[in-house]
Image (cartoon, rainbow over all chains, first blue to last red; front, side):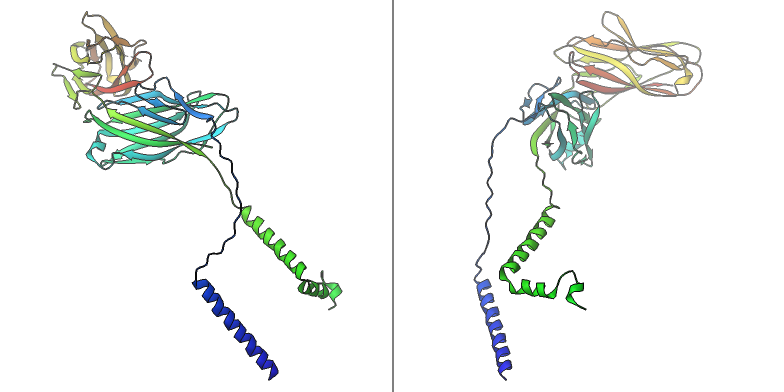
Length: 188
Length: 208
């Protein structure tokens, strides 16, 4: 009998413990541990940067970390900018870079049908193609393939690579229509 | 079975059970091993992104094509491509003058030339020369076909077109060795001097 009483007392204790833990949980007291993470953030000069290419058109803005190119094209024709903008690695070490699609506009409107395709080629210092990304139209909708290129290694030592752009407009394309593309150059 | 035959003894387990500090140490060791096992599978990579934005307006053409000839069909909203259809007679050479005109509307000079990018059934053409002619009647051979072979697919030097200048395209000495239809697909390459930017118009020659 003594033992049973003890067992009962233990069960009672357990039940009380359970009830009290439920009460504690219901008051939503957040318990957390803190670890200290200390970081020093410094702005450094970018070693991989945009620089002017031989064909960078007037009206374009080329800054080391961002670039806006104004690439005119013409109706029912193919326009090629062999050296639209350069990518220069001023570091002594190589870096991995890739092109990544961000946005295109307009999309889904009749204006899109004035274009056939826009292709961006990443060319190395010898003019060999390292990567490409093509925007094509179908039924007034743009599609891009691939949406991001594979990473390729640009050598160090002020190596200049370039972006070549080929724009094809449709046979019945009309003037004063525009297309805006935003891409990212990812650098590792 | 005696405790000695095992790699550990029950007495040592009891020691762990009884020793509070030892229990805590063992627990923390297990926790650290578990933590490192997880963290070894976690990879972190960092990269930075730079913005590249392109604004691509379709502008008015730098030059347009024109024709008074019945041989030519102009294409596009601004006449920027054309199909020229002329007859290649068997054994008799024919000349077709001014089948197409190139008119510059660019304020600066432009370099222009014709170049072949494809053809079909060329072997039946025994002779053909496609050339540019300017207003002073100077001629500039662009494409030459001899005995079914393309002996010149583009000129060595492009023609420098002055602002508002008009060039004429002639097809001369056109002669076939058999009946049929031949296509010569060409591009008019337009380049701003000292730039590598160029524009291509499609001009197709059909020899019936």
